[in-house]
Length: 135
Image (cartoon, rainbow, N blue to C red; front, top):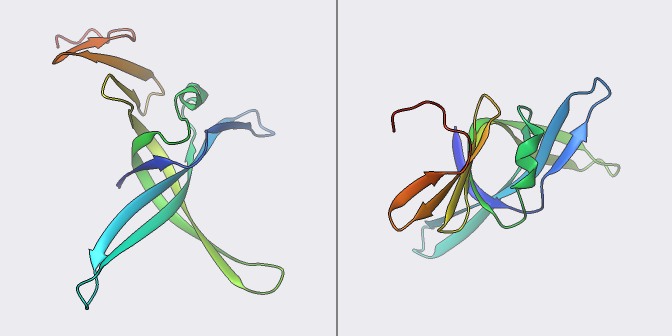
């Protein structure tokens, strides 16, 4: 599944007792539709996201950044102290593509490598190590 949204806060790296690191962040996804009366209704869904592959990506995941995420979604439901039901959406992220400004694009994939490309007047220059690809 793919989602595109904006980060609601800076990403945070958490270290678990078994020394594994996870990058946690939250993304807001906007949508709109017309109801039966023909009025436009705006809807925002929030996803709590986790990325386990490389903690280095946290450096570029800052509040307000537009990201495209690939992964799977799950829901969590619980009762609060007053007995009221609560729910949250979680996105287990396997790939991250950061749509920075018009000048940069950053991607983190299944192998954990973070690559940044600088775009100059229709040309793309890799600022990360090349992968021996002919293009």
